[in-house]
Length: 90
Length: 488
Picture (tube, each protein chain N blue to C red):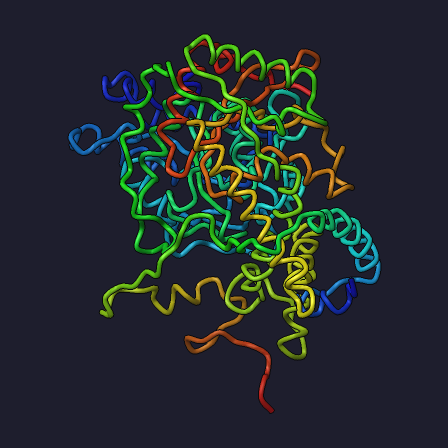
Protein backbone atom coordinates (compact mmCIF):
# COMPACT_ATOMS: atom_id res chain seq x y z
CA UNK A 1 0.00 0.00 0.00
CA UNK A 2 1.25 3.48 -0.89
CA UNK A 3 0.39 4.96 2.50
CA UNK A 4 1.15 8.56 1.50
CA UNK A 5 -1.22 8.34 -1.45
CA UNK A 6 -4.05 6.62 0.45
CA UNK A 7 -3.73 9.03 3.39
CA UNK A 8 -4.04 11.88 0.90
CA UNK A 9 -7.19 10.32 -0.58
CA UNK A 10 -8.55 10.06 2.97
CA UNK A 11 -7.53 13.68 3.71
CA UNK A 12 -5.58 12.64 6.78
CA UNK A 13 -2.29 14.39 7.40
CA UNK A 14 0.28 11.98 8.86
CA UNK A 15 3.63 12.71 10.45
CA UNK A 16 6.50 10.68 8.91
CA UNK A 17 6.81 8.39 11.96
CA UNK A 18 3.05 7.83 11.89
CA UNK A 19 3.25 6.91 8.21
CA UNK A 20 5.83 4.30 9.01
CA UNK A 21 4.00 2.78 11.99
CA UNK A 22 0.57 2.76 10.33
CA UNK A 23 2.01 1.43 7.10
CA UNK A 24 3.51 -1.58 8.86
CA UNK A 25 0.35 -2.32 10.81
CA UNK A 26 -1.84 -2.03 7.72
CA UNK A 27 0.43 -4.36 5.79
CA UNK A 28 0.01 -6.90 8.58
CA UNK A 29 -3.80 -6.53 8.55
CA UNK A 30 -3.93 -6.78 4.75
CA UNK A 31 -1.89 -9.98 5.02
CA UNK A 32 -4.55 -11.41 7.30
CA UNK A 33 -7.36 -10.26 4.98
CA UNK A 34 -5.73 -12.21 2.14
CA UNK A 35 -7.37 -15.30 3.60
CA UNK A 36 -10.58 -14.33 1.79
CA UNK A 37 -8.81 -15.38 -1.42
CA UNK A 38 -9.07 -19.00 -0.26
CA UNK A 39 -12.79 -18.94 -1.06
CA UNK A 40 -14.37 -19.39 -4.47
CA UNK A 41 -16.90 -16.56 -4.78
CA UNK A 42 -17.36 -16.65 -8.54
CA UNK A 43 -21.08 -17.48 -8.38
CA UNK A 44 -21.94 -15.51 -5.24
CA UNK A 45 -23.99 -12.31 -5.22
CA UNK A 46 -22.61 -9.53 -3.01
CA UNK A 47 -24.53 -8.46 0.12
CA UNK A 48 -24.71 -4.72 0.78
CA UNK A 49 -27.43 -4.98 3.41
CA UNK A 50 -28.22 -8.15 5.33
CA UNK A 51 -31.92 -7.35 5.57
CA UNK A 52 -33.72 -6.55 2.28
CA UNK A 53 -34.13 -2.78 1.87
CA UNK A 54 -36.69 -0.85 -0.14
CA UNK A 55 -36.79 2.78 -1.19
CA UNK A 56 -38.53 4.97 1.34
CA UNK A 57 -40.28 8.11 0.16
CA UNK A 58 -42.47 10.68 1.83
CA UNK A 59 -44.98 13.27 0.74
CA UNK A 60 -43.25 16.31 -0.74
CA UNK A 61 -44.52 18.81 1.77
CA UNK A 62 -43.03 21.43 4.06
CA UNK A 63 -42.06 20.38 7.55
CA UNK A 64 -39.96 21.95 10.27
CA UNK A 65 -36.19 21.56 10.06
CA UNK A 66 -33.20 22.75 12.06
CA UNK A 67 -33.04 26.53 12.32
CA UNK A 68 -30.07 28.39 10.85
CA UNK A 69 -28.76 29.43 14.29
CA UNK A 70 -28.93 25.84 15.49
CA UNK A 71 -27.19 24.51 12.38
CA UNK A 72 -24.36 26.98 12.94
CA UNK A 73 -24.17 26.48 16.67
CA UNK A 74 -21.23 24.07 16.53
CA UNK A 75 -19.39 25.70 13.62
CA UNK A 76 -15.68 26.40 14.17
CA UNK A 77 -15.98 29.61 12.09
CA UNK A 78 -19.11 31.44 10.96
CA UNK A 79 -20.35 34.84 9.82
CA UNK A 80 -23.62 36.28 8.51
CA UNK A 81 -25.47 33.01 8.99
CA UNK A 82 -22.90 31.05 6.97
CA UNK A 83 -20.00 28.66 7.56
CA UNK A 84 -16.63 30.31 6.95
CA UNK A 85 -14.19 28.35 4.81
CA UNK A 86 -10.79 29.10 3.25
CA UNK A 87 -10.78 30.78 -0.16
CA UNK A 88 -11.70 28.27 -2.86
CA UNK A 89 -12.04 30.41 -6.05
CA UNK A 90 -9.48 33.06 -6.94
CA UNK B 1 -28.98 1.47 47.99
CA UNK B 2 -31.44 2.70 45.37
CA UNK B 3 -28.82 2.78 42.60
CA UNK B 4 -28.47 -1.01 42.94
CA UNK B 5 -32.07 -1.67 41.94
CA UNK B 6 -33.17 -3.10 38.62
CA UNK B 7 -35.59 -1.11 36.48
CA UNK B 8 -38.53 -3.36 37.38
CA UNK B 9 -37.79 -3.11 41.12
CA UNK B 10 -37.37 0.66 41.00
CA UNK B 11 -40.49 1.18 38.86
CA UNK B 12 -42.66 -0.80 41.30
CA UNK B 13 -41.34 1.09 44.30
CA UNK B 14 -41.58 4.51 42.63
CA UNK B 15 -45.25 3.77 42.03
CA UNK B 16 -45.77 2.83 45.67
CA UNK B 17 -44.12 6.14 46.61
CA UNK B 18 -41.48 4.36 48.68
CA UNK B 19 -39.03 6.91 47.34
CA UNK B 20 -39.00 9.67 44.75
CA UNK B 21 -37.29 9.80 41.39
CA UNK B 22 -35.14 12.58 42.78
CA UNK B 23 -33.90 10.25 45.52
CA UNK B 24 -33.21 7.52 42.96
CA UNK B 25 -31.34 9.96 40.71
CA UNK B 26 -29.39 11.38 43.65
CA UNK B 27 -28.40 7.88 44.66
CA UNK B 28 -26.92 7.26 41.17
CA UNK B 29 -25.15 10.65 41.23
CA UNK B 30 -23.68 9.88 44.66
CA UNK B 31 -22.52 6.51 43.41
CA UNK B 32 -20.83 8.11 40.39
CA UNK B 33 -19.08 10.60 42.66
CA UNK B 34 -18.01 7.80 44.96
CA UNK B 35 -16.68 5.25 42.46
CA UNK B 36 -16.18 6.79 39.04
CA UNK B 37 -12.78 8.19 39.94
CA UNK B 38 -11.75 4.52 39.83
CA UNK B 39 -14.05 3.10 37.13
CA UNK B 40 -13.95 6.10 34.77
CA UNK B 41 -17.10 5.13 32.88
CA UNK B 42 -18.40 8.71 32.56
CA UNK B 43 -16.89 11.36 30.31
CA UNK B 44 -19.22 13.89 31.90
CA UNK B 45 -22.58 14.32 33.57
CA UNK B 46 -24.77 17.29 34.42
CA UNK B 47 -26.10 16.94 37.95
CA UNK B 48 -28.49 19.87 37.75
CA UNK B 49 -29.97 18.69 34.46
CA UNK B 50 -30.38 15.11 35.76
CA UNK B 51 -32.17 16.30 38.90
CA UNK B 52 -34.42 18.60 36.84
CA UNK B 53 -35.40 15.60 34.70
CA UNK B 54 -36.02 13.62 37.90
CA UNK B 55 -38.31 16.33 39.25
CA UNK B 56 -40.27 16.33 35.99
CA UNK B 57 -40.66 12.54 36.30
CA UNK B 58 -41.84 12.90 39.91
CA UNK B 59 -44.42 15.43 38.77
CA UNK B 60 -45.62 13.03 36.10
CA UNK B 61 -45.78 10.13 38.58
CA UNK B 62 -47.89 12.11 41.02
CA UNK B 63 -50.08 14.09 38.62
CA UNK B 64 -50.43 11.91 35.56
CA UNK B 65 -49.99 8.37 36.84
CA UNK B 66 -51.90 7.02 33.85
CA UNK B 67 -49.25 8.41 31.49
CA UNK B 68 -46.31 6.73 33.17
CA UNK B 69 -44.41 3.65 32.03
CA UNK B 70 -41.96 1.20 33.56
CA UNK B 71 -39.24 3.62 32.50
CA UNK B 72 -40.66 6.78 34.07
CA UNK B 73 -38.03 8.16 36.44
CA UNK B 74 -35.38 5.58 35.50
CA UNK B 75 -31.84 7.00 35.04
CA UNK B 76 -30.30 5.65 31.83
CA UNK B 77 -26.68 6.27 30.86
CA UNK B 78 -25.95 7.22 27.26
CA UNK B 79 -22.97 6.15 25.19
CA UNK B 80 -21.16 9.20 23.84
CA UNK B 81 -22.22 8.35 20.27
CA UNK B 82 -25.94 9.19 20.64
CA UNK B 83 -27.41 12.68 20.32
CA UNK B 84 -29.18 14.08 23.37
CA UNK B 85 -30.32 17.63 22.64
CA UNK B 86 -28.08 20.25 24.31
CA UNK B 87 -25.82 17.59 25.86
CA UNK B 88 -22.18 17.26 24.75
CA UNK B 89 -21.34 14.65 22.10
CA UNK B 90 -17.74 13.69 21.37
CA UNK B 91 -17.68 9.98 20.37
CA UNK B 92 -14.69 9.95 22.75
CA UNK B 93 -12.78 11.86 20.06
CA UNK B 94 -10.95 15.17 20.09
CA UNK B 95 -12.23 16.10 16.65
CA UNK B 96 -15.69 17.11 17.85
CA UNK B 97 -14.35 19.81 20.18
CA UNK B 98 -17.16 21.39 22.22
CA UNK B 99 -19.97 19.90 20.14
CA UNK B 100 -23.45 19.91 21.64
CA UNK B 101 -26.29 18.03 19.97
CA UNK B 102 -28.98 20.10 18.29
CA UNK B 103 -31.56 17.30 18.31
CA UNK B 104 -32.43 14.03 20.06
CA UNK B 105 -31.70 10.62 18.61
CA UNK B 106 -34.95 8.74 18.01
CA UNK B 107 -34.09 6.24 20.79
CA UNK B 108 -33.54 9.17 23.16
CA UNK B 109 -36.82 10.77 22.09
CA UNK B 110 -38.59 7.47 22.73
CA UNK B 111 -37.02 6.99 26.16
CA UNK B 112 -37.80 10.58 27.11
CA UNK B 113 -41.39 10.09 26.02
CA UNK B 114 -41.51 7.04 28.27
CA UNK B 115 -40.26 9.28 31.11
CA UNK B 116 -36.69 8.00 31.47
CA UNK B 117 -33.83 10.28 32.56
CA UNK B 118 -30.93 10.73 30.12
CA UNK B 119 -27.92 10.70 32.41
CA UNK B 120 -24.34 11.46 31.48
CA UNK B 121 -22.03 10.68 28.59
CA UNK B 122 -20.42 7.25 28.74
CA UNK B 123 -16.90 6.54 27.54
CA UNK B 124 -16.18 4.41 24.48
CA UNK B 125 -13.51 3.64 21.94
CA UNK B 126 -13.17 6.64 19.64
CA UNK B 127 -16.02 6.52 17.08
CA UNK B 128 -16.88 3.05 18.43
CA UNK B 129 -13.72 1.58 16.91
CA UNK B 130 -12.22 -0.82 19.38
CA UNK B 131 -12.82 -3.57 21.90
CA UNK B 132 -11.41 -2.12 25.13
CA UNK B 133 -12.06 1.69 25.43
CA UNK B 134 -8.27 2.08 25.15
CA UNK B 135 -8.95 3.99 21.92
CA UNK B 136 -10.87 6.71 23.76
CA UNK B 137 -9.09 10.04 23.24
CA UNK B 138 -9.78 10.87 26.90
CA UNK B 139 -9.10 7.87 29.15
CA UNK B 140 -9.53 4.12 29.46
CA UNK B 141 -12.52 2.83 31.42
CA UNK B 142 -11.65 0.16 33.98
CA UNK B 143 -13.38 -3.17 34.46
CA UNK B 144 -15.29 -2.97 37.79
CA UNK B 145 -14.31 -6.59 38.55
CA UNK B 146 -10.60 -5.86 38.20
CA UNK B 147 -9.48 -2.29 37.70
CA UNK B 148 -6.28 -3.38 35.94
CA UNK B 149 -8.36 -4.87 33.12
CA UNK B 150 -10.36 -3.50 30.21
CA UNK B 151 -14.17 -3.36 30.39
CA UNK B 152 -14.48 -4.38 26.73
CA UNK B 153 -15.60 -2.09 23.98
CA UNK B 154 -16.51 -0.16 22.21
CA UNK B 155 -19.39 0.52 24.66
CA UNK B 156 -17.12 -0.11 27.66
CA UNK B 157 -18.38 2.90 29.63
CA UNK B 158 -21.98 1.73 29.28
CA UNK B 159 -21.16 -1.79 30.49
CA UNK B 160 -18.97 -0.62 33.38
CA UNK B 161 -21.53 1.98 34.54
CA UNK B 162 -24.28 -0.65 34.73
CA UNK B 163 -22.02 -3.25 36.35
CA UNK B 164 -20.86 -0.73 38.97
CA UNK B 165 -24.47 0.31 39.74
CA UNK B 166 -23.90 3.88 38.59
CA UNK B 167 -27.01 3.72 36.41
CA UNK B 168 -29.92 1.29 36.22
CA UNK B 169 -29.42 0.78 32.48
CA UNK B 170 -27.48 2.24 29.59
CA UNK B 171 -27.60 2.50 25.82
CA UNK B 172 -24.77 1.44 23.57
CA UNK B 173 -24.19 0.66 19.92
CA UNK B 174 -23.01 -2.60 18.37
CA UNK B 175 -21.24 -2.79 15.00
CA UNK B 176 -19.23 -5.99 15.55
CA UNK B 177 -19.94 -6.85 19.18
CA UNK B 178 -19.65 -3.47 20.88
CA UNK B 179 -22.63 -4.16 23.16
CA UNK B 180 -22.37 -7.92 23.71
CA UNK B 181 -18.61 -8.11 24.29
CA UNK B 182 -18.41 -5.43 27.05
CA UNK B 183 -21.63 -6.77 28.61
CA UNK B 184 -19.97 -10.19 28.81
CA UNK B 185 -16.71 -8.83 30.22
CA UNK B 186 -18.44 -6.65 32.84
CA UNK B 187 -21.13 -9.16 33.83
CA UNK B 188 -24.33 -7.50 32.63
CA UNK B 189 -26.94 -8.15 29.95
CA UNK B 190 -26.38 -6.63 26.51
CA UNK B 191 -28.60 -6.83 23.45
CA UNK B 192 -27.86 -6.24 19.74
CA UNK B 193 -31.19 -6.01 17.89
CA UNK B 194 -31.84 -7.21 14.33
CA UNK B 195 -30.61 -4.73 11.74
CA UNK B 196 -33.47 -2.27 11.18
CA UNK B 197 -35.30 -3.10 14.42
CA UNK B 198 -34.17 0.11 16.16
CA UNK B 199 -33.87 3.50 14.45
CA UNK B 200 -30.30 4.74 14.00
CA UNK B 201 -31.35 8.39 13.64
CA UNK B 202 -29.12 10.43 15.94
CA UNK B 203 -26.50 7.68 16.24
CA UNK B 204 -23.16 8.89 14.87
CA UNK B 205 -22.61 6.41 12.05
CA UNK B 206 -19.60 4.08 12.04
CA UNK B 207 -20.60 1.32 9.57
CA UNK B 208 -24.14 1.97 8.38
CA UNK B 209 -24.96 -1.57 7.25
CA UNK B 210 -23.84 -3.05 10.59
CA UNK B 211 -24.63 -0.51 13.35
CA UNK B 212 -27.52 -1.06 15.77
CA UNK B 213 -28.37 0.58 19.09
CA UNK B 214 -29.22 -1.60 22.06
CA UNK B 215 -29.54 -1.74 25.86
CA UNK B 216 -27.27 -2.71 28.75
CA UNK B 217 -29.22 -3.84 31.81
CA UNK B 218 -28.84 -5.81 35.04
CA UNK B 219 -31.24 -8.56 34.00
CA UNK B 220 -33.15 -9.89 31.00
CA UNK B 221 -36.50 -8.48 32.05
CA UNK B 222 -35.07 -4.96 32.09
CA UNK B 223 -33.49 -5.67 28.72
CA UNK B 224 -36.92 -6.52 27.31
CA UNK B 225 -38.38 -3.32 28.83
CA UNK B 226 -35.78 -1.02 27.27
CA UNK B 227 -35.77 -2.86 23.94
CA UNK B 228 -39.56 -2.55 23.81
CA UNK B 229 -39.33 1.19 24.30
CA UNK B 230 -36.71 1.84 21.62
CA UNK B 231 -37.84 -0.56 18.85
CA UNK B 232 -39.93 0.19 15.80
CA UNK B 233 -39.97 1.89 12.45
CA UNK B 234 -38.94 5.53 12.22
CA UNK B 235 -39.61 7.82 9.27
CA UNK B 236 -36.27 9.49 10.05
CA UNK B 237 -34.30 6.27 9.39
CA UNK B 238 -34.98 4.75 5.99
CA UNK B 239 -33.25 1.53 7.07
CA UNK B 240 -35.62 0.95 9.99
CA UNK B 241 -38.04 -1.82 9.06
CA UNK B 242 -41.86 -1.79 9.22
CA UNK B 243 -42.08 -5.01 11.19
CA UNK B 244 -44.56 -4.95 14.11
CA UNK B 245 -42.91 -4.90 17.55
CA UNK B 246 -44.16 -7.82 19.65
CA UNK B 247 -44.66 -7.60 23.41
CA UNK B 248 -41.24 -8.80 24.56
CA UNK B 249 -42.08 -9.10 28.24
CA UNK B 250 -44.84 -11.57 27.40
CA UNK B 251 -42.24 -14.00 26.13
CA UNK B 252 -40.46 -14.08 29.50
CA UNK B 253 -42.44 -16.98 30.95
CA UNK B 254 -39.59 -19.45 31.47
CA UNK B 255 -40.96 -22.14 29.14
CA UNK B 256 -38.35 -23.25 26.63
CA UNK B 257 -39.31 -26.91 26.45
CA UNK B 258 -39.00 -28.20 22.91
CA UNK B 259 -37.14 -25.15 21.59
CA UNK B 260 -34.25 -26.12 19.38
CA UNK B 261 -30.96 -24.50 20.29
CA UNK B 262 -28.04 -24.83 17.91
CA UNK B 263 -24.45 -25.38 18.93
CA UNK B 264 -22.04 -24.20 16.29
CA UNK B 265 -19.00 -26.42 16.28
CA UNK B 266 -16.94 -23.63 14.68
CA UNK B 267 -17.44 -21.53 17.85
CA UNK B 268 -16.10 -24.13 20.26
CA UNK B 269 -12.52 -24.33 19.00
CA UNK B 270 -9.06 -22.72 19.06
CA UNK B 271 -8.28 -19.88 21.45
CA UNK B 272 -11.27 -20.56 23.67
CA UNK B 273 -10.23 -20.24 27.32
CA UNK B 274 -10.76 -23.40 29.38
CA UNK B 275 -12.78 -21.69 32.12
CA UNK B 276 -14.94 -19.89 29.55
CA UNK B 277 -15.54 -23.19 27.79
CA UNK B 278 -16.45 -24.92 31.06
CA UNK B 279 -18.94 -22.19 32.02
CA UNK B 280 -20.55 -22.28 28.58
CA UNK B 281 -20.79 -26.08 28.60
CA UNK B 282 -22.42 -25.94 32.03
CA UNK B 283 -24.94 -23.37 30.75
CA UNK B 284 -25.69 -25.58 27.75
CA UNK B 285 -26.45 -28.51 30.08
CA UNK B 286 -28.72 -26.20 32.05
CA UNK B 287 -30.63 -25.33 28.88
CA UNK B 288 -31.02 -29.01 28.17
CA UNK B 289 -32.39 -29.67 31.65
CA UNK B 290 -34.91 -26.87 31.04
CA UNK B 291 -36.20 -28.92 28.12
CA UNK B 292 -34.44 -27.31 25.20
CA UNK B 293 -33.32 -29.62 22.45
CA UNK B 294 -29.67 -29.22 21.48
CA UNK B 295 -28.83 -29.50 17.81
CA UNK B 296 -25.40 -29.30 16.23
CA UNK B 297 -25.24 -26.72 13.45
CA UNK B 298 -22.44 -25.64 11.18
CA UNK B 299 -21.41 -22.10 10.31
CA UNK B 300 -18.53 -23.02 8.01
CA UNK B 301 -17.51 -19.48 7.07
CA UNK B 302 -17.00 -18.31 10.66
CA UNK B 303 -13.24 -18.22 10.18
CA UNK B 304 -13.64 -15.57 7.45
CA UNK B 305 -15.85 -13.23 9.47
CA UNK B 306 -13.13 -11.04 11.00
CA UNK B 307 -11.43 -10.43 7.64
CA UNK B 308 -14.78 -9.69 5.96
CA UNK B 309 -15.78 -7.36 8.76
CA UNK B 310 -12.58 -5.34 8.62
CA UNK B 311 -13.14 -4.64 4.94
CA UNK B 312 -16.87 -3.87 5.08
CA UNK B 313 -16.75 -1.88 8.33
CA UNK B 314 -13.69 0.19 7.43
CA UNK B 315 -14.99 0.91 3.93
CA UNK B 316 -18.26 2.22 5.35
CA UNK B 317 -16.41 4.11 8.08
CA UNK B 318 -14.14 5.84 5.57
CA UNK B 319 -17.24 7.27 3.89
CA UNK B 320 -19.16 8.06 7.08
CA UNK B 321 -16.28 9.81 8.80
CA UNK B 322 -15.64 12.07 5.80
CA UNK B 323 -18.08 14.49 7.45
CA UNK B 324 -15.56 15.30 10.20
CA UNK B 325 -13.69 17.84 8.14
CA UNK B 326 -13.53 20.93 10.37
CA UNK B 327 -16.09 22.86 8.34
CA UNK B 328 -19.51 22.54 9.95
CA UNK B 329 -18.73 21.39 13.47
CA UNK B 330 -15.99 20.33 15.81
CA UNK B 331 -12.44 21.54 15.98
CA UNK B 332 -10.57 23.01 13.03
CA UNK B 333 -6.91 23.44 12.18
CA UNK B 334 -6.63 26.23 9.60
CA UNK B 335 -4.93 25.66 6.25
CA UNK B 336 -4.11 27.69 3.16
CA UNK B 337 -6.74 25.84 1.12
CA UNK B 338 -9.59 23.42 1.94
CA UNK B 339 -7.51 20.27 1.38
CA UNK B 340 -4.81 21.45 3.76
CA UNK B 341 -7.49 22.38 6.30
CA UNK B 342 -9.13 18.93 6.07
CA UNK B 343 -5.84 17.04 6.28
CA UNK B 344 -4.53 19.01 9.23
CA UNK B 345 -7.86 18.92 11.09
CA UNK B 346 -8.23 15.17 10.61
CA UNK B 347 -4.55 14.45 11.21
CA UNK B 348 -4.72 16.17 14.61
CA UNK B 349 -8.33 15.33 15.51
CA UNK B 350 -8.45 11.57 14.92
CA UNK B 351 -6.62 9.03 17.08
CA UNK B 352 -4.43 6.19 15.70
CA UNK B 353 -7.12 3.49 15.43
CA UNK B 354 -9.56 5.77 13.62
CA UNK B 355 -6.83 6.83 11.19
CA UNK B 356 -5.86 3.19 10.66
CA UNK B 357 -9.43 2.21 9.84
CA UNK B 358 -10.23 5.20 7.61
CA UNK B 359 -7.04 4.60 5.63
CA UNK B 360 -7.74 0.87 5.33
CA UNK B 361 -11.32 1.61 4.27
CA UNK B 362 -10.17 4.19 1.73
CA UNK B 363 -7.67 1.69 0.33
CA UNK B 364 -10.16 -1.17 -0.10
CA UNK B 365 -12.52 1.18 -1.96
CA UNK B 366 -9.82 2.81 -4.08
CA UNK B 367 -9.53 2.43 -7.82
CA UNK B 368 -7.95 -0.89 -8.77
CA UNK B 369 -8.54 -2.56 -5.40
CA UNK B 370 -12.33 -2.38 -5.08
CA UNK B 371 -13.03 -5.76 -6.69
CA UNK B 372 -10.21 -7.54 -4.91
CA UNK B 373 -11.20 -6.37 -1.44
CA UNK B 374 -14.59 -4.71 -1.06
CA UNK B 375 -16.58 -6.64 -3.63
CA UNK B 376 -15.01 -9.92 -2.53
CA UNK B 377 -15.83 -9.14 1.11
CA UNK B 378 -19.44 -8.40 0.20
CA UNK B 379 -19.62 -11.79 -1.48
CA UNK B 380 -18.13 -13.56 1.53
CA UNK B 381 -20.69 -11.67 3.59
CA UNK B 382 -23.35 -13.45 1.53
CA UNK B 383 -21.76 -16.81 2.40
CA UNK B 384 -21.70 -15.92 6.10
CA UNK B 385 -25.32 -14.82 5.97
CA UNK B 386 -26.30 -18.01 4.12
CA UNK B 387 -24.66 -20.08 6.88
CA UNK B 388 -27.07 -18.54 9.35
CA UNK B 389 -30.11 -18.85 7.07
CA UNK B 390 -29.34 -22.55 6.72
CA UNK B 391 -28.72 -23.05 10.44
CA UNK B 392 -31.95 -21.27 11.36
CA UNK B 393 -33.90 -23.71 9.19
CA UNK B 394 -33.01 -26.29 11.85
CA UNK B 395 -32.95 -24.29 15.10
CA UNK B 396 -34.72 -21.43 16.91
CA UNK B 397 -31.51 -19.92 18.29
CA UNK B 398 -27.79 -20.57 18.48
CA UNK B 399 -25.78 -20.56 21.70
CA UNK B 400 -22.10 -19.56 21.81
CA UNK B 401 -19.59 -18.03 24.19
CA UNK B 402 -19.74 -14.22 23.79
CA UNK B 403 -15.96 -13.88 23.90
CA UNK B 404 -13.06 -16.37 23.70
CA UNK B 405 -11.58 -15.17 27.02
CA UNK B 406 -12.56 -13.08 30.04
CA UNK B 407 -11.39 -9.43 30.28
CA UNK B 408 -7.75 -8.94 29.34
CA UNK B 409 -5.24 -6.58 30.94
CA UNK B 410 -5.08 -2.92 29.98
CA UNK B 411 -2.26 -2.61 27.44
CA UNK B 412 -2.13 -6.33 26.67
CA UNK B 413 -3.37 -6.00 23.07
CA UNK B 414 -3.15 -2.27 22.44
CA UNK B 415 0.00 -2.52 20.31
CA UNK B 416 -1.34 -5.27 18.09
CA UNK B 417 -4.50 -4.18 16.26
CA UNK B 418 -5.01 -7.59 14.64
CA UNK B 419 -4.99 -9.45 17.99
CA UNK B 420 -7.51 -6.91 19.27
CA UNK B 421 -9.73 -7.51 16.20
CA UNK B 422 -9.62 -11.27 16.73
CA UNK B 423 -11.06 -10.90 20.25
CA UNK B 424 -14.40 -10.10 18.52
CA UNK B 425 -14.49 -13.39 16.65
CA UNK B 426 -17.77 -14.67 18.20
CA UNK B 427 -19.75 -11.45 17.90
CA UNK B 428 -18.87 -10.16 14.43
CA UNK B 429 -20.84 -12.61 12.26
CA UNK B 430 -24.12 -11.51 13.87
CA UNK B 431 -23.71 -7.99 12.47
CA UNK B 432 -22.64 -9.22 9.04
CA UNK B 433 -25.73 -11.46 8.91
CA UNK B 434 -28.00 -8.70 10.30
CA UNK B 435 -29.46 -11.00 12.97
CA UNK B 436 -30.03 -10.33 16.69
CA UNK B 437 -27.94 -11.40 19.69
CA UNK B 438 -27.87 -11.15 23.46
CA UNK B 439 -25.14 -11.72 26.04
CA UNK B 440 -26.04 -12.84 29.57
CA UNK B 441 -23.74 -13.69 32.49
CA UNK B 442 -22.97 -17.43 32.79
CA UNK B 443 -20.30 -17.59 35.47
CA UNK B 444 -16.89 -16.36 36.56
CA UNK B 445 -13.29 -17.29 36.15
CA UNK B 446 -11.64 -18.19 39.47
CA UNK B 447 -8.42 -16.25 39.87
CA UNK B 448 -8.99 -13.43 39.27
CA UNK B 449 -12.78 -13.50 39.45
CA UNK B 450 -14.00 -12.15 36.11
CA UNK B 451 -17.43 -12.45 34.46
CA UNK B 452 -18.07 -14.83 31.57
CA UNK B 453 -20.77 -14.20 28.97
CA UNK B 454 -23.11 -16.53 27.12
CA UNK B 455 -24.40 -15.42 23.73
CA UNK B 456 -27.68 -16.36 22.08
CA UNK B 457 -28.07 -15.53 18.41
CA UNK B 458 -31.59 -15.30 16.95
CA UNK B 459 -33.27 -15.12 13.58
CA UNK B 460 -34.00 -11.76 11.99
CA UNK B 461 -36.71 -10.26 14.23
CA UNK B 462 -36.35 -13.25 16.56
CA UNK B 463 -35.82 -10.96 19.57
CA UNK B 464 -38.64 -12.60 21.57
CA UNK B 465 -37.15 -16.06 21.22
CA UNK B 466 -33.65 -15.19 22.44
CA UNK B 467 -35.05 -13.05 25.25
CA UNK B 468 -37.20 -16.00 26.29
CA UNK B 469 -34.26 -18.42 26.31
CA UNK B 470 -31.90 -15.98 28.01
CA UNK B 471 -34.49 -15.22 30.67
CA UNK B 472 -35.29 -18.89 31.33
CA UNK B 473 -31.58 -19.60 31.73
CA UNK B 474 -30.96 -16.52 33.89
CA UNK B 475 -33.74 -17.44 36.29
CA UNK B 476 -31.97 -20.72 37.13
CA UNK B 477 -28.76 -18.88 38.10
CA UNK B 478 -27.62 -16.24 40.58
CA UNK B 479 -24.76 -14.74 38.57
CA UNK B 480 -26.54 -11.39 38.20
CA UNK B 481 -26.71 -10.98 41.98
CA UNK B 482 -22.94 -10.91 42.43
CA UNK B 483 -21.41 -7.45 42.63
CA UNK B 484 -17.94 -6.27 41.61
CA UNK B 485 -15.57 -5.09 44.35
CA UNK B 486 -14.03 -2.27 42.28
CA UNK B 487 -10.49 -3.35 43.12
CA UNK B 488 -7.35 -3.73 41.04
